[in-house]
Length: 276
Image (cartoon, rainbow, N blue to C red; front, side, top):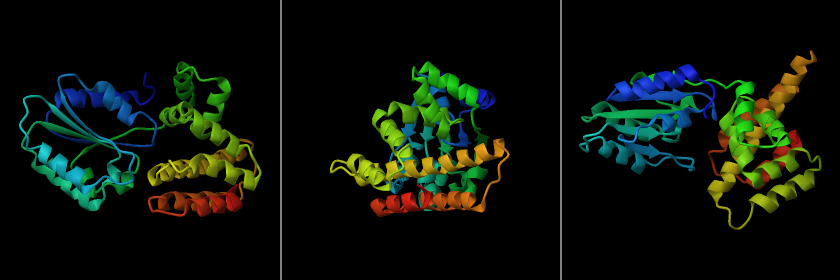
């Protein structure tokens, strides 16, 4: 069951059923049910094309494939879903834009992103834009309880993702990742932290994409950990120092830079030396 954003999901359902051509852009934070809502609403008799990838970038070949698909005749309603639309760069988004503008067939485009500022203005202007918001902590808690996680597991996940049930669920269902993150954040020894990560995530079997995705997740959790510390200070009416704000800014910059191929062993050491 999906929680939160009831009005958005109702509008999306009506749009999918009643429209036969055009585009809608679903945007908002990760893990709040954008992609899951679309999946839940798709009907059996619709032709469905879903583009979803763990890669950092969606290729020009994928954009060209979609531009060709729209010219293929269909007797059914066709739904093209592109998750993480921001993974298409500017050139690739322009290819997709042409497909959207020139489509002669009954095709609906559903674009999904959590990086709204990375989407071309021309695509935004030619799409309905539906913003998904954070989910309440109560609803997130209810969702996770239904998945039969333990109280201690849920409590740890909510430390980082109190309003993003999808993100919390993905962390909890990956037992290895969850265990290592627990050990990592509750261990205060620099060298033990480094060893923990290298032993578990720098294996010979791990490819560069897997390592990159892991470190993006780790940096994000550092940011959320610092955010929680600031919120706790506000709630307890304690002073927030500039250093805490600066830490978050620098971590966000590092998160943005993670699209590049970096020496992650050095980046990890730098994070721990300065923010651990």
